[in-house]
Length: 248
View 1 (cartoon, one colour):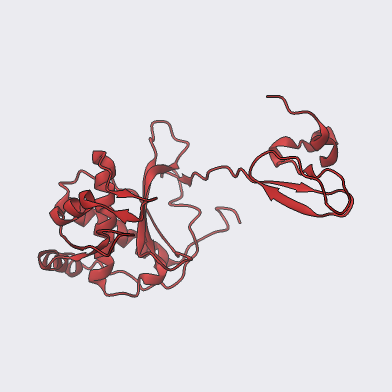
View 2 (view 1 turned 120 degrees about the vertical axis):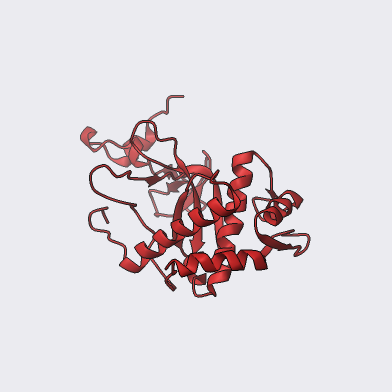
C-alpha cells in the first residue's frame, strides 16, 4: 500500500491532533516548554501490557536538510476507552521519560521495564503520584495528582476531547502537500537470513552465517540472497548468486 492509497480515518487524525495538544498543554504546565513535540502515534500493543511507551531514539527522519529527527511517544489504541484522566496520566508518564532522555538521566533499566528512583523523582516533580509495584517494574505505576486533575479541567473545557478508538491502522504518513514535513520511521535492518535445501526444499533461518547440512539429503543448505544481493539485470538465478564468493 502506497502513501497515496493509505488514508487514516478522521477519528484517528483527530485523536493524534488532540494527543499533540495534550502534550503541548503538559509541556507548558510542567516542563516550561523545554520538551520538543515528538512524533505521537496511536497504535495497538499486541501484547496488551502497556498503556503507552516512549522511544528514546530519534527513530523518525525526513529527507529535508537540517531535520535532526524525532523521538516517539505512542499511546496504545486499545486503552483509549479509559477515563480521560487516566489517558492524560499515561501521556504525562511518557513525557517524564522524554524529560529524562533530554536531561541525560537514566530513569529505567532492564530494557525500559524497571523504573528506578530517578524516574520516581522526576514524576513526582511533574504532576504524578508514583507507586512501587515490586522488583520487576519498580516505580512504574503512576496517576495524576489532584492538582493535575484540576489543571486538566482547563484542557477539557477548551474543547480538547480524545476519541475512543479501540483499533486503528499504523500510520504510514504524517501530513501531505507542499511545505509539510513528511516523516519516515527508521527500521533496523533484519539480521535473519534464510537457507534452503535445493533437493527437498527444507529451509531454516539463522541470524549469522552458518554451514548447515540437510539431514535427509546430506547436502549443504544454500542461503537465499536478499534483494540487495540480487540484480535481475544480471539475469542470474538466486542459486548462482548464492554460490558466488562474498567480498569482505
